[in-house]
Length: 120
Image (cartoon, rainbow, N blue to C red; front, side, top):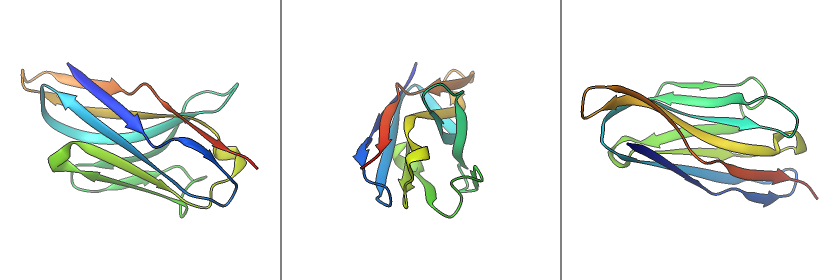
């Protein structure tokens, strides 16, 4: 009922930048929160950043001051601008959305993930 499609991952050198996008579609009445999580090889999935409809953002300590999350509510799209990337930022980045369907049921959806590799 809700699909999330991520794009923008790839290979970047340390110190470089990438911008991820996540577009939500389906029978959506409202998206309360959109966010980004990542999973490094051999590690558990962790929160990177989230943003509410009103624009209130929350960041993991490890990315604060380097990453910026934003969203376009009219397009049901979220973005993650990643600057000053480090090798430890390498991982699969997943988009997450939590909200309400047109059937007035709550939903939580995940994207398929996009790989970010930070390396020389």
